[in-house]
Structure formats: C-alpha cells, structure tokens
Length: 130
Image 1 (cartoon, rainbow, N blue to C red):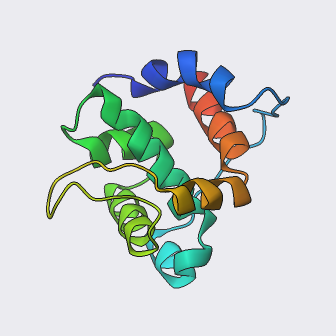
Image 2: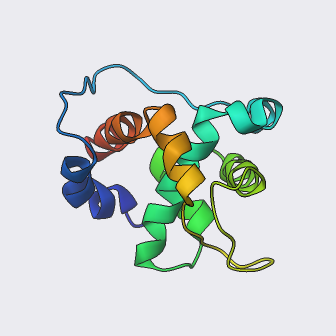
C-alpha cells in the first residue's frame, strides 16, 4: 500500500501553521457514533473532512479509504464525518455517490473554531514519523 502521509506531510505541514506543535502526544478521533451524536459540534468531523478534501488532489479513487488509512480510523468514521460535514454545510458534494468536495466558507470557519490547522498538523506530523 502507498504511504499517503508522505504526499501530504512534506508540503502541507508548513503551510498549515507556523506554531510549535507537540507531536509526542497521541491524538485520538471520536468514533462514528460520537461524531453523529455531536453532529454540528463535532470538531473531528470538520478535521476529517479537511483531510479528505486535501487528499482528493491525488485523485478521487478510494478517497475515504486513503483518508482512513492516513489518519488511522475506520472507513466508516470517514464516511460519517463527511456526511456530517455535508449536512452542516461545511463540505460541498460532487453529486450522489461521487467522492470529493470542497470546504465551504462555513467549513473554513468551523475548521478555525476547532483549531483545525494545528490539530491537522499534529495528526499528519505524527503519521509522517512512521
């Protein structure tokens, strides 16, 4: 299998944040059930949606599976996070059953509110150390 973390980490960590990030502390995502329960309050849904959006630049094929592999969660968690992000107007849709999408303005705001850039840099930095 391909290590997608190298595609994202090398160029994207620097662009996310200039802040010092502690990569030694483990990061855990909520489960699918927890994301569904939190819905619009789910910080993990917007973060997973952003990573999903980032990975589509390398092609739409198996986008959810590649996202799940990169961040170490089940594919069902990615599906749930994308569903929640779309339902809350954070992520656009390319049509029924088609992968991909772009963060909307409200998605960008939700990502900022969740301190998503720092969290994504931390997550991808941890995965890049493999």
